[in-house]
Image (tube, rainbow, N blue to C red; front, side, top):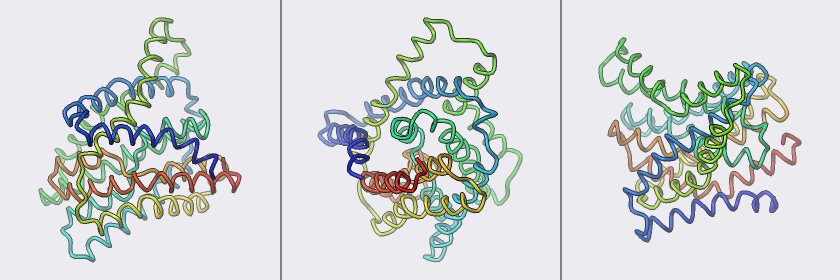
Length: 311
């Protein structure tokens, strides 16, 4: 476990560096916002394009994998929502708590870290996890919130969903990368070098941006946030592991899925909470707590998977 901890430590050290830079005001919130936009629209998109362009889609796409992750995630979503409703929260808050309990930081943290720790062959399964998060569960969130506010789900709701997916640079870059890879053509030398250089900036900038964004978060509703963080870091990987067993997903693919499910709450959940004006402080605190705790929990999960022969 110590060896794995030492491998994950540089990733969390970069997050810590960003946190200190933001906390000391050396890096302003405005600067953090622009760095995040650079990563999201440029560096990470270039990295994802490069990964996707070199994937054999037919080889990595696996329906049992998709079904297992969807079921494992869906069960935790329902449990967290039920607990929230049992506490007497509003239905909108219950939806956001459920979303917080299952959506991990796969894009900014998971892809670069798991690709290094588990090998480049992990990128395909991780991208499948990211696709389910973005296409399935983000759509559920949008439909649930708009449906609750409008009293029904209309054609306009599906238009909002389609527009959101089409404007998401992570989805667009993966689709374009797969399309280019299908042609069998190599990128022209200067273009390939440009994409490599830009993509190389994704990992350090993304981790620094995570830390800097966390520095502006205050801890409120700690008890509820701690429960949400626990659901994400513990219940989610356990549920996904059970779903893998149910659908017969074994070996390396199961290990990558479980490791991806163990990632802390994604920062974009807070952005959505702010956008819809539903429990942003609660979500913010859950992101802060889960990211801090994941230094140990992610290490422990990967160590257990390694001992079990999955990775």
